[in-house]
Length: 484
Ligand SMILES: Nc1ncnc2c1ncn2[C@@H]1O[C@H](COP(=O)(O)OP(=O)(O)OP(=O)(O)O)[C@@H](O)[C@H]1O
Image (cartoon, rainbow, N blue to C red):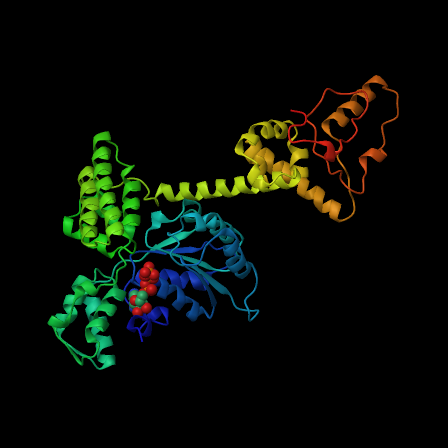
């Protein structure tokens, strides 16, 4: 079994180091009440943050619901899984449920769209305790950070790491040189998990481990991209940057995109130009690597993509939030637009009996003019959702209001209370009649206003007010450009 999992502390009191953080967590658990602020535990990988959250749950006898980065944290999924857990009682009916959002600073890209907002919503409505885990506090979305209390976790001292490794070796019956243990501890960077993984790797099939058996390059590859970016901007030495680039969990092309994004924070034009030039060359090397399967080039690509930007950054540090590559967001938006367009084409094609693929985008201009003239009627007849209506009228708020009204109307329709609204022209005509005959009794809701079924008609654009309501046009005689 994996020693890191086997020797994972079960109780808060067994966790090594970070005494103050552990005391704060225990206190938070004991005094937790509905409405208490969630905790963010943040710090480098492998120092006990997730372990502490689980140990607290065990100490408090709380159930655990855990979501991590591999879960597609779309709004719907978060609300389904955590939302239910956060507002209802636990399975046993009495206890609480601790909701753990692991890798909470890792919400990005299309699949996480809405994820941050959903977490913030869950936090606001939760009646259960919540703990978020992050490597980088500032990688956490601002909307979430502002709702939580934060507890930092520090890396563990090398001598503490060494003594824990000694305990594990003794428990496993492995004889290990003090020098070997110290070597692993010194190179662990305070990451206990990587130290445990290193000693286990060295001990496989051996009952004695000497210094020569230890390869600290076996360090778990968990340097975060944030550390790499910070190292590049703060003028770390080449060896450190290259080691981080090797250790970051990601392919060279994704790492390069993160670095590229961070270069947008440089202030000087020349510096930026230099950084982008070296990144472009690195990009060419990566491309060649993929095309020719000649992996030696990766090494050069990595060197270029960290050293060039580091030189451009001039060791001034990064004074902005480290963001995921902007092009990921754009790709997400592009995909959304494409799906939107094909959805619209499908609906237009169906309503006007034209094959969707025969409709070209040139139709959008005239159709847009018609829809702008009476968005409500077109949205009703063409069954638009709010994104589709917004596409034509370019007004998000108005589109949302119209669709909200139509949804309400449809709901009422389903319940058998169909109240057909008058078209603008009909309303104007009624209004005109009222003005001409001021003494006439208030028009009661006429038969015109109530229908069992809404007319299946393509609406006309608004017309000059007529003296009496326009008849509802017959859809079968309409063409795409009617009224245009
Ligand atoms: N402070 C600690 N005390 C005892 N064991 C620890 C401690 N920190 C880490 N470990 C060991 O390392 C393993 C991984 O720790 P854990 O998952 O809690 O780290 P983490 O800080 O949450 O890292 P990540 O951010 O990568 O999730 C644990 O199973 C345990 O064996």
